[in-house]
Amino acid sequence: VVLAYGAESDRVVGIPGEDLKGVHSAREFVWWYNGHPDGRNLDPDLKNTDTAVILGQGNVALDVARILLRPTSELAITDIASHALTALEQSSIRKVYLVGRRGPVQAACTAKELREVLGIKDLYIHIKETDLKITPADEEEMKNSRIHRRIYELLSKAATAGPSQPSSGQRELHFVFFRQPDRFLESYDKKGYVSGVHLEKTGLKGIGSGKQIAIGTGQFENLSCGIVLKSIGYKSVPVDDLPFDNQKGVVPNLKGRVLSDNSGDPTSFENGLYVCGWLKRGPTGIIATNLYCAEETVASLSEDLELGVLASTTRLPKLGRDGLLQILDNRNVRVVPFSAWERIDKEEKRLGGLRNKPREKLTSWEELLKVAGSK
Ligand code: NAP
Image (tube, rainbow, N blue to C red):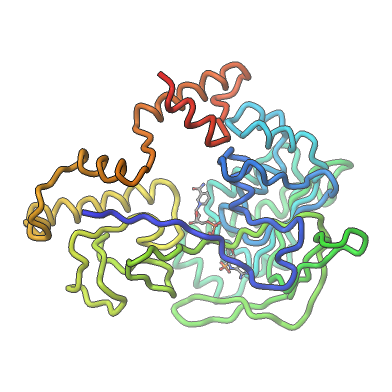
């Protein structure tokens, strides 16, 4: 039995200026503040600008906005990486723009995450009332999706709940709808650095089955900023020798059983091969979605075991876990068993306790492996 899980890459916007300094992917930024060892050196410049633009309106975009806007006294008692907390304490960012190419009915976030952002202490929220006007097609979309209706209601309420102007020094969150990025602008006085985003106004066009997509109108405007975080979703990376549906970015499968090709023929299984997570269903869902997803795959696997489907795949003796560990050892792969992870967990919690935090993340591979290997 082989279980496949994949890596994912950021979806690229694919417009000029994407490699300017100050343009980051949200994934890199999330890794940075979460203390992922591969993201600790990002060092985003939060000190030379008061404005950040986030492209996209999904939950990752909201997470990033929340980190930039929440009072650091509140962040200090979370498990945020300490290098990120220090940078955020020194941050000069006061305005965050969340830019969506469609309208408030189509925003990709979910209600709990939106409520958390809207509930940030002493935050001025701006949403243009004209963007909240809905069409019969929007009404249809909301009829078909309770989540979209809830998001629209929350945004409508937030648009009128607060004062019409920010008070001096107050942090601001602007929801910008119906705008798609056209190119990133380069600063005149700081060559190679981003100074804004050239945005195209959009309208919505129905494409059947109640779905509406963004269409450029040919009208443009600039939005100035000193940092851009691209949060437009992910795409799974194909795994060597596995069938892959490039369009959907998934390994073709039926309830986790890998299919031999994309033809949709439900009888052509890759015997003994299973898939789960984003590689199985695409880059969507909250943590609980992954639990159900894994349960479904494991149920398929158990069913095949009971039916004897797997028994016929090989005549070699089955060594189970010991056999797997032997293969990894032969390939010089260092294995961190659960007991070693528990040591890391314990050490992070101990360090956190010293600073009134639930944990202090170890943010380098050296530190992690050292603690994992300690007795
Ligand atoms: P996402 O939910 O797919 O949102 C992507 C956003 O980017 C959408 O607003 C989308 O607009 C926009 N977009 C895509 N391509 C674009 C383009 N070329 N130009 C401009 N905008 C573009 O992705 P995500 O926020 O990265 O989240 C991934 C998954 O993880 C989601 O299912 C999310 O719910 C989940 N997640 C969950 C949590 C949580 O449970 N708290 C936290 C983080 C993430 P369109 O709708 O118009 O395509």
